[in-house]
Every structure is written in C-alpha cells, then in structure tokens.
Length: 618
Image (cartoon, rainbow, N blue to C red; front, side, top):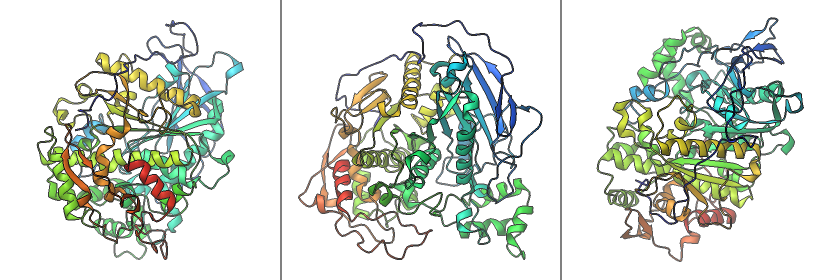
C-alpha cells in the first residue's frame, strides 16, 4: 500500500496552533448566552450555545432548521412556509431515509452502519433540515463578515446526513459552518417515466435549495454570503464537481460559492464518470418488488407505499438509484466541460486517503469478481489487467485478494482521478491544492474493524471529532489541528490556499503534502513528490482516461516494463508514441448522444493531450 511511502524529502513535521483572531495562546471560555436567537426568512429560530476547551469563541448552534417544506415524495423541493412562533432549533432533525447496501461487492452493511450510522439516526421523509454552527457575536461591527463553510455529506447517494457537529470550526477558527440533509436512493433519485428527466435528480435540487438558503439567511448568523466555500466528501465531493460544472456558464457573481473542497471524490474521471446509472430499469424493479408494477398509475402507487417498505425493497433487491445526467443539475460530457473551462473558476482543495478502498469494497471479494464489477473488459483488456495485478502483487504488504482489490480501487477510483482532475484544473489556471492522508484512526472505531486500515473517510472522521471527546494519539491531535487550521485558511482566503505549495507551482514536484506517516516515520505534514505519489496511475491510465464505454480500449500493456521499485510499483516505460496514444479515440463520439448516455468524454483534443501529458508523463 502507499502508506509505505518513499521518503523523497525530509519530513516537515508541524504542530498546528488554534486558528483564531487574537494573539493570546489560550482564552477563558466566554460565558455563553444559553438560548441564542436569529431571524431568518421563515421566522425566528432559537438555538443553544456551547463552549469547547480553550476555544476563543462560544458556539451558537442552530439545529434542524427546515430549509424546505416537508417534501412531497418524488417531487421537487419547495421553500418552507413561514412560522409565527420561534422555531426550536436545539436538536438535529431526522435523517432522510438511508439504504445500507447488501451485496457481494460493497462493504458489508454491518460495517457501513457501524462507521456511519452509530448510533442509528431517526429517519423520515420530512428531512430537509440544515444546521448552522456560528461563533457568538462579540460586537455589531463584524456581525456579518465571517467566512462560511458548507458541508455536503457523502454516502454513495444511498446513505448519509448532515448530523455532523461542526462546532470546532466556529469555536477555534472563527468561521460559520453549515451542514444539511438531502434525499438519497430512490427518494432522491426516482426515474419514473412519468417524471420529466429534468426533475428526477431531487437530491441535487435539494442541495441547490440549501445553497440558496445559505445565500438568503447566513448573514443572520454572522456569515458573509459572498464568502462561501462548499465542501463535500465522497458522494458529497462528487456533488461539488456537479455544482462546479452546472454553474460553469454562469457569471462569477451568480455562483453561490467562491471556493470548493473535494475529499475522496469527483465525477469527471475514472469509475465516477463511467457509472452513471440508467435508472429506468431500477425504478421498474422497485415498483415490481412493492406491488406497483401493474398499477394504472405506477407513480401514484409508489407514492402511497410506506417509506420503510421502499427502503426494504431496495435492500432486498440490491437495486441502487443515483443521479442521472439531465444537463441541469448534472451536465453531460464532464471532461469536455473541464477541458473548455465551462466550470466555476474557483480555487480547489482536494484530498485523498491512503487506503480508500478498504472501507468501500467487501472484505470477502475475489479478484475475478472485483475486475468483473469495476474493471470489466470494456475498460481494461486482459493483458493490461495482468500487468496491473502483477504490479500490485509485487507489494509484499498486499497478501489477499481483498488487499489487492482495495489497493487498485484506491488508485483507480480516487487517487488517480484526483491527480488528473487537479492537473486539468491547473491547466485552466485554477489554483489547486492536494493532500494525501495517511494517519490511522482505528482507535476511534469499533475494535472489530481493524482490517480497514487508513480507510475511506479517515480524514473526515478525524476532522469531525471534537477535542476532549476523543482519545487522540499525539500524532492524531497534531494532524487534526493542522488539517482543521488548513481548512480554515482556505475558507477565509481561498486564493491563498491552505498553507502548502499549490499543484504545478514552483515547488513542483513537491506540490502535495502527506498528512501522517511517511514510510515508517510518524509525521504530521510532509511536502511530498507528487510524481512518486501518483506513480501507479500509469497502470490504470487506459481505464481512467475518458473514452466511449462501447469502444474497447486498445491494449497497451507492452508499454509497461518489468522493473518494480522497492514499493512494488511498476514503472512505466516512456515510448515515442505516448503523446499520440489518444489520437484515435472516437473522433465521432460527440455525435448523437442523449442526456442519459454512459458517455464519459472524448479525448481527441490538443488540450486533452496536454493534460494527459501533465498527469501521466511526469
């Protein structure tokens, strides 16, 4: 695994300080007003106040605020009705209904629930709630000037909610933090032919309405609507990519954010771009499972089915629904959008984790099942597959099919797409920063989950923990404070970055940082050689690079040599034809595509060739 990193540069270990706006190292906890109030567009909300250890700011928490009316099932969200009496915003609202997937390729549901739903959250269709964590105002002079961080939770568009406690960002960093729920699975992404295609991505419309709510109301909590940064993890990061593209043709002034953070996710390259669902058959399958297939009005029948019955039907059948390309919330042709600059031109902060795949695929998976599911012959020819497997087998730390599959999944789905997207952004002069997280947090999860390693979401778990409420190791605490402070620096001044060298800057190739272990050395933050970090990406270049899925990828396994470095990573042999390797990729593939095609882009352009050269030929 890549947690056995070659040490390219001396570890620059840093212990972060609290990000605050005073010179005093510690502060007596200010006395909180127990019931803070704010007046928003729907009425008065009453929250509660809390203090954190050694924090310079009391935190006013406003929880479970409706940002939409109770939704009509399978319908677009609507603004909430105003209320006359103060709204009690002292407790989280219910989560939207969650679908914990049970199949032979995904993480076992008991593992997922132990990590992401422990203790279980109450669930309801009346779930479109938003939570605000704001520093208590000390004076009227700066009541509405603070930067704002808006968190979009992940969960494969099947699970997840906004019940994260973001108090530390307000208490230590003096920013306003926001999180919200949105509809997932069949509740958020129905595909009835009775629903217009532009009205099916309900969960994405929920997200947009939440961002609109922030623009209208965040000043009431001391936030500046012109200083919003959106932050997503996993499917939340995928959503951030959707938003970047869907606002790509807007005037900068109309984009409801000025910075974007994407942790362990995007939607432009690799599996994320190759796996948009065709939801029609999925809808029919669920309709049949709940007895609505032969109804005169299938949509109305599905609206009458008890919500838990729909959840149970998804789990029993293994049917998953997700966002469809509608050219409104989810633009088609993601690569073309990035190539042509049709994306919101805002600074980016991107993060990946050392062993992403260990928290996302079934620990009993075989390599045959893994490849047939995630890297079928339409993406990877047999000879290339053999080369990929041989390279990972050369890593002595990968001893089981699960180990190898998880390592390949980490690179193919997360590490390499992040590298390519970052280089694409830099080619558009978008300031971009990357980090690589390699700090174990296994002491914070149930004892029987030790096999997960530095799993998908480890950085998020640490970042969302609360000082004094977790059993930190010294390394964990230092990484936690550094990363939280880096987020705050980025949110406050996105163009200045989080505090390390930008991708493609003069510091390159030391233009990424490792947060945590480098080799066997315990560290906090280490500038690292991105060429080494991304060395394996050449192995999945054919699979990750955008091509029409119906066209087999030419086998280029002859371009790989047999020299394996001391990390077990196969080095790519450069050939004179490399720069032309994509010249013949579907010249006509832009023709005759519809909104719901599985097309993932056309690589036939000079700009694309330049981006690929940047990403793969360093």
